[in-house]
Image 1: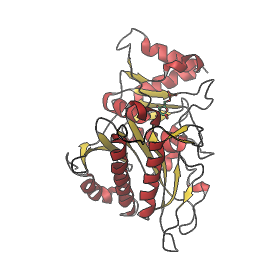
Image 2: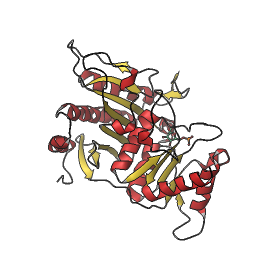
Image 3: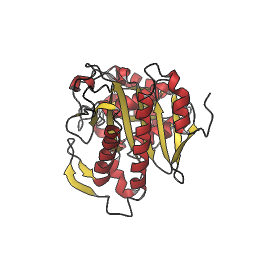
Length: 335
Ligand code: P6P
């Protein structure tokens, strides 16, 4: 049984045997995420001090202005995963296409692909609000030793072998799962070590926080409008509290600890919602379910959605099980 204040390194070694696939590689992968997280954290924490904030002058495939830290974080995670010769492919929100990693040795025996949102919520950087990194890990499905193909990335979320996030907030935390529960590690910046601070994280089945951008209310489907009015009604343990800071990782993290629901529905402005299935919704849904929570698009379990393209978007409702099920009920009734 893992005990608090165990380091991330000790935790990985102790739990390696519980991971049903081969030992070693996934542990090394998580360790490389840890290293990149520390490097990015260092830059995020001094963003106000050096000329690294502000748009990098480019836009990503989403047509969004790329903040310099977006570019920096993307480069660091790709560099770390590549240099350690652990993965055979990487897909990133900041890259138009996936990246094939051919290891130094000819027969590239690396089995894992990683999909990543290197700096989610980056529009918050200039206003000193928490941002995060989200990652998702699969075993490749094409033959080991051959270059990866799009098929290796377009896998259903229920095939993930690991997923997690880094939240660069009042403290920096790495929260991840390999399918045996969710554990949170807090960085001690003085010595650059992550310590197990939140063992076996669980969503409370009920909660009193709802997180949605109500500025889009008039554009929402009727079922979502009805659910939001339900949250605001004076009845029983309601009205709920509205908390939305525009950073998925931070809203998710708070809701997992306190109980709550996060919604990014489709709307007349965003016909499939805004969040990306492969490197935002799937990893957060895997974490949610591993923490006794739930995640759907309002009708279908996120982890069962068949991906069709690398940067596809889906509507996303995620959090405390009973809250998500109540929102789904409103969606069905309004059908
Ligand atoms: P809006 C950040 O860009 C993000 O992907 C999530 O982290 C966040 O929850 C959402 O978009 C905010 O989007 O449209 O409400 O500003």
